[in-house]
Image 1 (cartoon, rainbow, N blue to C red):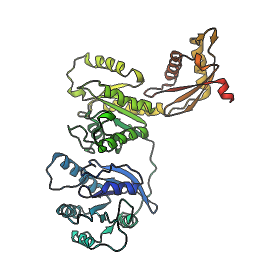
Image 2 (cartoon, helix red, strand yellow):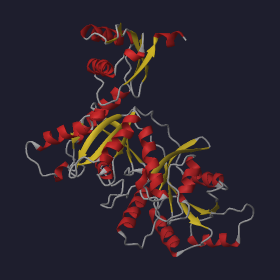
Image 3 (tube, one colour):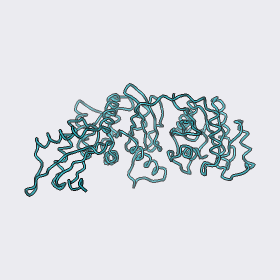
Image 4 (cartoon, rainbow, N blue to C red):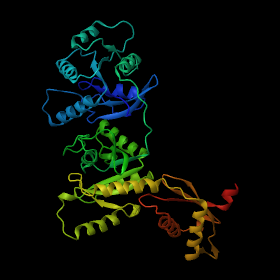
Length: 442
């Protein structure tokens, strides 16, 4: 059975994300003293008294607002409420009970879910201040004093939450889950793609660049397997980052690449290749992840029977530094070629984690050397004694030679290509380390 879900809700700027980070023990959600920083639902795993649960941070609820972005944030929060086993309603001691707090409380009462009322920013220990008793007017039972910054009262809060959760059931062991980071520059359709594969509006979509800020995880299961898709903020040049929220958004996106198995590098098909696309792809390449270049919005491109081949050829030149990455033309709007995308994701994950036996590796090496003799320099010929695999993710091989200076880059590429062809290492970078025989003795 899946873990119970606990949703954190409340109006903007009451400290929901700070509390979320405190409970999960990591800075997963961006915290900034600005209303509306959190927009999508942010999930994190948490544990209290041996009980595991999923915690969900949501955007600030403003039930009366008609702003388009705030309306979508409200829809995301409503989905979190509807799917939650229990709800933590966060309020602010310093501002007291506001009209928005009362509207949110009415909304939660109608939901029928167990609600634990949290009065945040109670930074002084001891007896509750007089202002604390005002929160009984919300009609949600006894409030809990909490300081999410200092951690005061979080134990009492979680004790109350545990009392509200249903009885624990044995959890079935999860199969292998492939983590997929969806990366790209702003406004190329990352959130639209994640929503399409999820079959629901999990991430807020807007034509305004920079809508997504946090890295949003979403696990889906289909006939291709189980995948965790990570929607990320659009990556921009550091020099173009204007505020701290965007800085942390970029940082979260780069961290998402680090924990992913496969990266989908999204390009806007209506715009074509830009220098920023190359820089985004370079982040995934340097991190050694399985990579797939996805040209999105293909449904909106005016094309004939030669357009795809011409663009594929152009992109192959633009991404020459990662020639192993396949190029696929998709549409997040219509779902075009998403089945093929999942097939490539599985191939990339398998290749990135592949381990080759030393015996099989050296058989390929012997055949390659017999086919093309190693280079010579001033009468000295390169000798490759043997090869072994040092690690996976990405596949990394070590060659022991008589003199690494004789091992020219072009011959290294030849050896890597022979390994790729023989073992089917597609969609992943392959790294080759050179060691002199004397280094092994040392």
